[in-house]
Every structure is written in C-alpha cells, then in structure tokens.
Image (cartoon, rainbow, N blue to C red; front, side, top):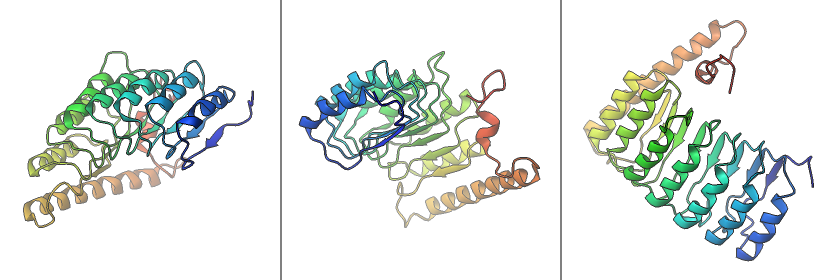
Length: 267
C-alpha cells in the first residue's frame, strides 16, 4: 500500500478493457489519493464496474475526479455512480464527453445526493436534455442532501428553455450557485431572457455563459446577451471593489461568504 501518493494522473493513456481490471487493483492500494485524473482512457461499461469496486469504501480524501472523454455511457454511469456515492470529500467532478444521456444523468444525480462537499460539476458535451438535468436537480434538492454546488457546466448538451426552471429551483435553495455554463445548447430568446431574470434576482451569480444557443444574426438575442454581459461585469466590479476594501482579504471570493455550514465553519 502506497500511503504517500496523493495525485495520480493517467489521462490519455487509452487503456482498453484489458487494462481496467489492472487499474482497479492498483487503485485499491492508493487509499490517500486527493486527485485522480482518468480522462481519455477508453473506460467503458466494463471498466466502470472495475472502478466502482475500487472506489467503494476507499478514497475518503479524494477531492478531484476527472473521467472525461471516456465512452462510459448510461450503463457505465449506473455502475460508476455506486462508487461515486462513497466519495464524501469530493469537491470537483468532471464528466465531459462520456456519451451520457438522460438515463445516465439520473445516475449522476443519485450519486450527487451523497456528496455534500461537491462544489463543481462538469457534464459538458454529452447528450443530456432539460429532462435529464431536471432529474439531476431533483436529487440535488432531496432533503438532507446539503447541495452547495457553486459551479455547473452543461455546455454542448441538448437542453431547451425548460432547463431554466431547474436553475431557478437550485437558486431558490440558497445563495451558493455562482457560475453557470450553458453554451451550445438549444435555448431560444425566451430562455435567454429567463436567465437574465435569474441573474437580476440572484446576486450570487457572477458568471453565466450562453454563447452558441442562438443565431449570430439574431439582433434581439445579441442585444439581450450584451445586456447580460454588462450586468455581470458590473457585479464582478462591485465584488472586486468590496474585496479591495477588505484589509485582510484582498482576493475577495463569494465562496468565502456562502460556503459555510450552520456553525459558521468552512465545509
């Protein structure tokens, strides 16, 4: 057992099915990992099962997990979710381009409900619709889940205007969500206007990216997007100005204010 290794980076090794049992066995002997990068390793349904077994009951210190650019698919995500649910210290989960649809999104949501420390969720470039993200939201709002996500990236999926309803529900839960990325989805002008309303209503939002949803020639849409950019720029300027006035903390961050538990201690 190697108790000293805390950062394991194995991205872009293209480990096929034959290598996944070996990887699962190796991970069992690295209990103190803090960061694990397995992006781009051909991890499919079979390999996901091996990783699930390796994760269960281990990695109590893991804070960052990257699984992007693997053909995990929905069935693989169902397998993986069982292992993810036990990573109680996880703060960042990246699942870019993993061939996941709404069925896999439901599995992601089920795992998130057991991850109270998670702050950053990236599921960009999959095939998740607004229905899939609604399923994720339902799990995040389960009583006792202690959801405090500050960063959500669903770029390059197939979400329509209805996804704004899910974001509204998350924002109403508490002043945690700060950064939203919805580029390259299927929002119409109506959806963009709804996102602007949410930004106006929730001052904790400091970054919202909506590019690639509407035609560049849509004058009305460009006007609304320009207004959104101006609104967020002004908000960030005020936050930076407030940070400069703070004698002890020059680098002001909204997380410093909202990311605390009921007792006022960082979580």
